[in-house]
Every structure is written in C-alpha cells, then in structure tokens.
Image (cartoon, rainbow, N blue to C red; front, side, top):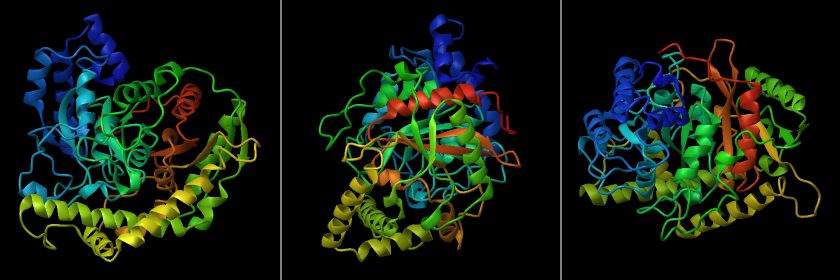
Length: 478
C-alpha cells in the first residue's frame, strides 16, 4: 500500500482492476498519506474520509478509474450536501452546503473516482496564490515557506505530495497551470467549452473559466480529460469533439512542429526573471534536439496591453454579480468583514461598469482574440505556428505572503504575465515540469496550442516527458 500512492492514476486503476489492491485499500492508503503530510501543507480543508471509505467498500461505477482516490477543489465541482466555501469566510461562517452535484462531479464519479476531500483555494479563486483568510495558506511540498500557486493550490499540493494522483482544478487566468508549475505537475487548461460548467453556470468571466485537473503524468491528464469533456444539455457552446480519445495521442510522435519562444514579458511589463529566461533556453535546446523548428516569436497582438484592463473590468463585473447572488442566498447585505480586500476592490470596480461598457469590453476581446489566433492560423494561407512556448509564471514559486497582503496585487501583476491571455482566447495551454530553480523549486514551462488542439499538446508533452522525465522528483514533504 505504501508503494501504491507513488503510482499515477492509470497505474493505480490497473492495480485495482488486477486485484492487486482493493478500492478500500487504495482509499486507506491515500487517507494515511493525507494524515501524514496534510498538517504541514493545509491542502485538504474538508475531509471526507469516512464517506470515501464507505463508498470504496460498496458498489462503485465500473469506469476506467474505478476505486482511484482523488480530491476536488472547493471551487467548482460542487457536491450535493457537502461544504462549499470557495475560500470565503462568509460561506464558511454560514456553513454553506452545495445544493446539487455539478455535471463535472457526476462525470468524475461515473469514471469511478472516490473523493476523499475538498481542497484549499483563495477566496473565489481570484488570485494566483492559495492563502485565504478563511482557511490559511496552502504550503508547497517542495518548501513549505513557499506558495503552491493558485487558485488550485490545495489540489496541486495534494497531488505533488502523493496523497492522490489526480486533483480537480479550474482556470480563469492561470489557476490550473500556475499551481502545476509551482508544484512540479502537469496542468492542462482545456479549450473553451470543452468541460461543461452546468447545471448552474453556462459560462463565467466571459467564458474564460474552465475546469480540468492536475496530475503527475501526461497520460493521466489525457485520460481524465477524456472522461470529463463533452457537451451537457443546455451548454451555451461546446468545443468540437476530439478526433479520437486523447489517450490515443500519448506516445504518438508530434512530427516537426513550428514553435515560437517567448522568454520575457517585453511590453507586457512585469518581471523579466533570469531563471525564467534560463528555463526557456534549456527547453529550446531540447525541442531542437527533438527535431522541432524553434523560433523566437510571439503573436504581435500580445503587445496590445489594453486587453488587461478590459479583462479586469469583465472579472470585476462578474465579481459584483457573484457577490450580489450570495447576498440573496444568505438573505443579507455583505459587509467589509465578509470579503477580502482585493475582492472588495474588484466589486467596487464592477459596480461602476455599465451594461453597455461590459458589452463593449466583451466585443473588443472577441476582436482581439481573432488577432491573436491568426498567429497560429493565419488567414493568408501561410504556415502559422503550432505552439507558443513561454514561462508559466515569472520566476520560481514566491514565498508565502508575497502575493497576499497590502502589496499582494502589485506583486501578482509582476508575475502573472503569461497565462491569462489564453483564457481570453479560449486556447488550450499546458504547463509541464521541465525546469527546477537554483534553490530546487519547480518552474513550469507553458505551451499554448492552436484552438481546440489539445491533441497536439498531448503529443508534444508526451515526447518531452520521455526526453526530460520528471516522475522521480519527490518533494521534501513526503
């Protein structure tokens, strides 16, 4: 059982199917590891250990991950009757419970997963470090003085410390990719519309938010996405189905790809970090050795920094709408003591944005997206790029406190320069654990694919996983 936790989900599922270990023993192994390391990490905040043991001992759906333990982020993937606090003190104090299972939760369950708990997240997932006042900071398994990233930081810490092999995650500006980067994991943000947000939501943040997972292997990421993707009744839009299952792309040679490199933020502002440049230089050498065409290039539309303010306006308007909804649920007006300062600030911006201004910002974003995507899919018939390669975040994982507190938002804008653009465009993007800092901390490298081309991302990621294997790297907290 002690060896079981070090397997990826695909191997865990096979061990269970072979009868080498029972679902109940698999869940017990995950819980034992959680009890060992979670006090140091504060990754799992809502334990469901007794419920998980009961489920594992009973009849489980005969899905491909039957009996494999996992965690759900406490934001999205709602579970009927379970605590659902979204990193918020007001919801924690109200002991708020989800009224229904989300479609995503249903899909995880049909795949056979057993949920052992819900994980730490910043308030409403609105920042890139997991340090909510409601629950305190999640801590990085590689160095507990450092951030896990956010907003899927609790899930990332749970997977990196081998509590589970799969953690639910979601991403509105980098919240799958950044925790994957900071915790040495694989993190794929799927294309817009790939995963249903029903039954309550059709979209959020202009369709910028999307669910997915963090894992330790490319094959797990592909296999999980195969299970959770697809249209659900009433979805406002959906990504076109894959030509074949993503698992069929693992190990398939990607061919000679044309890959653009961006190793510094340039006109975007923010930190031009020496180790971020080094991570891209090292990756470029490997890509060239694998036969790819590597060019220092990026979409010219990335230099149109106006997108940042317009996206802030859109997120702010949605923040105000969300808080207004919770006022109706709780039956009272929210006070300054209910909401963290950064979200209060965002709400005030949101209140100032008219409906006409919101629609204008959305329309500008649609036009900007077309200008961005032309780099991958030029309209003049010339060959575009297959992939853009960037750092996932500017620099190594910051220390706890650096991205929170009075100066946290300013520091966040310094390091959050490479990810949110592709939430706006809706393109698939993946962080891979290809580089470690001089102090031994993970630093992910991001690859951005053409619209709806998760298949090409998985092929390239699988090739890089073989060239630069990371599975044997273990964090200090084990």
